[in-house]
Length: 482
Image 1 (spheres, helix red, strand yellow):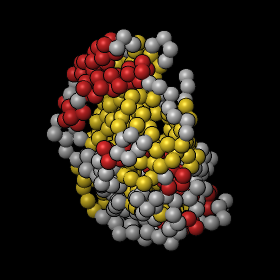
Image 2: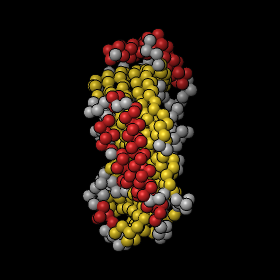
Image 3: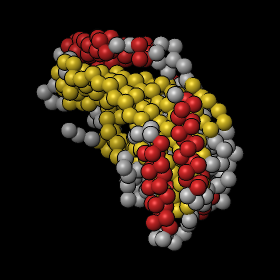
Image 4: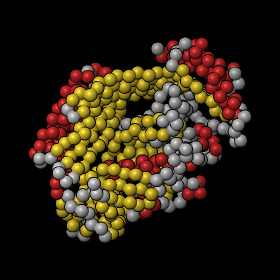
């Protein structure tokens, strides 16, 4: 299949070049996905889908054209190339400023992630049985506290993504990456209160990843803690206090308040109508936005990560991108187009979710670098504060500047000790206000999986976001009530 596909991609490139394309790329992509879903203890669905095809992108008359085709017949591929050429020619008559691509070193390489336990060898019955066992743990744990459970949604699945990328600049990249993923969601309630918990998990690898997650133990701990919050949590303090945010909230902050604003296409206004704008402007590069302790990076090459890749879909080798360093904005996420526009080199951030989607600038694994504080050291000198371990909900404005996070499992801190639970504390700060309030960072780095949405049509792509625990000084909380 590999040699046949390589021949078809090269055929597309030759046709594009013959028709006048200054640059052309052809990408074969296959996405296989299988998932089992359990809803309130009842099997909802077990499904398997497969989608494959070729995406073709050309640069002609300083305009980009993109087309795709699901058929692997040469005549259909030729039609798709001609369609991309036609789109580029039509666009060139309308645009005032043409598109250029940065000059980059191209590679010929093959990247295959080999799972220890092939996910395709695990049948749907085994996945469903595991989900039933997990659901049993959930219900059993809730029964201990005499609380009600509802909205129990559990899923386990895998994806296998294969790509072959060839372009006229000399790239030949072949990749095959398996992913495992799981999701759980549930609501715990009594007569007065209810709290919902939701989490995605994901990593590259095989069924061994699911075994390592120990989902039955994880769900029992979650239900126990959420039940205690429903039954015992008190209102949070209203005065300015110190706040310790656990890695889960920090991870989300890094993704939303640094990752998205650092997308160069967003800064240039190309995402405004779909995903929004950004507070980052060219003149802010190098400017301070937070404490000197804060360094935030985006690194596609983290082994086993949900956002793992070595080369992007333009054939550029990926690397760690330092978005914030020592509290100062350092660099943006670039593809070859935005890099050329700003006189820079691409840092390998172009990815597409499916064969029929154009590669656009995307995050991979965005996280805050850890510090050297233990948890006990973070809370040791806090007279009165709140520790927010996990979040219930969040929102952020269009420019990723004003944001709000509501805790679900949260605790009062008194005289350096954990002293009971607090109910839905809400932290509401600007991006700069949050990062500038940090005076200590823990060493407990952790990562969380998600599907980052961007583009029109929408592209949801797997990512990790991560971080350690952090301490914020003099923050005012507000209560969140049902």
